[in-house]
Image 1 (cartoon, one colour):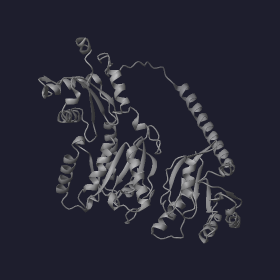
Image 2 (tube, rainbow, N blue to C red):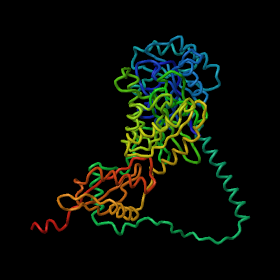
Image 3 (tube, helix red, strand yellow):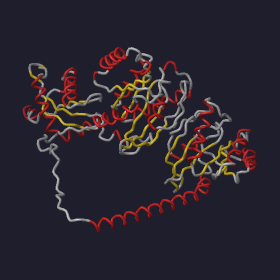
Image 4 (spheres, rainbow, N blue to C red):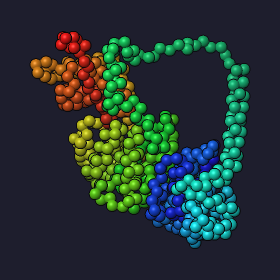
Length: 516
């Protein structure tokens, strides 16, 4: 139970700017152009000592049809129904508009607390607009400047009573839950039979590290300092709403390939706007969700066109937002349109995902419209194999996001590839494998001496990254590294995820003594 505060108002009154101010991050796109925000966005807000959920909304328009404006209004109305209290923003600088008065009338008829906030109030020059707002009939007006952070103490005064009420409800709910647990425990203890059990377990068959060379710790530390791998880089996503333990799943692709439709299909609700128009989604919209007992953060993103075709400032901001999502996702579903063959832009987006070390799934939408399915699938598989040798076996899921057919196979594929992407292999097992594969295909001879691969360990998971110590690391051919990567993928069953190998040479401790 968390206090929910919705920010509503007509377009371009500063709703997203206030949202970003409250969450402390630039999560929502902001531009002088009206109507940038189209879907509702939830964020964790902090204002002084108050913590609550804040909802950014699309600009309210006087439209009820299936147009973009009508769908934006529907999203805003859903946010209003979902909140506990609403902040109705008006532009103090521009004064009241007919839309402000129209929606003030609409809000007065709703049985929900609404407070008028006069935004863009940076000085006395805006006083006339502030005084006009009292005529809306919604009570007192709080003058603020969300851009400059002025007047935030007024918002604290407004929200404090609702926050206290919410906290009291939480305490009452916890007390009721604790009382129920005590009652259940009491009943269980009265009926409990004595039973024998063995609490000791010994299922840790992982390599204990005793056979690692003494200098491995120094070598791994050195590699970290040089940026070759970062043990925690998958957790450093401060720029994207992210909770540890939740699988970060991004739906990406070119415009109008069914990304938002798939998200709605998975969630079984009209969470984001959809339609035949390309470019409906602008903000990356994150939704926390649970599937098969696993916590998921599902992120819908704006479509990505070729860079040379982008000339609109808002679209550039949207693409930048999508790139940020890709960087901090863990699994990405790349949606492609089955009515067209996979093109260069699809491959470019896929390459971005793999270069970031993320797990990738290809979602082939509109599969029901494909006539020669075997030929299409062969062409797609061949293209992926030839384009991404470093991530062979990328899962392909065919579906129709509109009808839902095949969409039930997306999440099992996501969970499977996420577990592969997160896998750790014991060091002892890796070194036994290394001995076998180097005997099967000997490393090359350089200057009359064969390169020796001494030992191997997994540096990190997510993506699976391995460290190999060898005699002449700089001279080990890329082809041999690819051989090792393909062997790892096949022998340890890791299809479709990027695998990284870092090769290092350790100093010969006797070399310096010989020089002396």
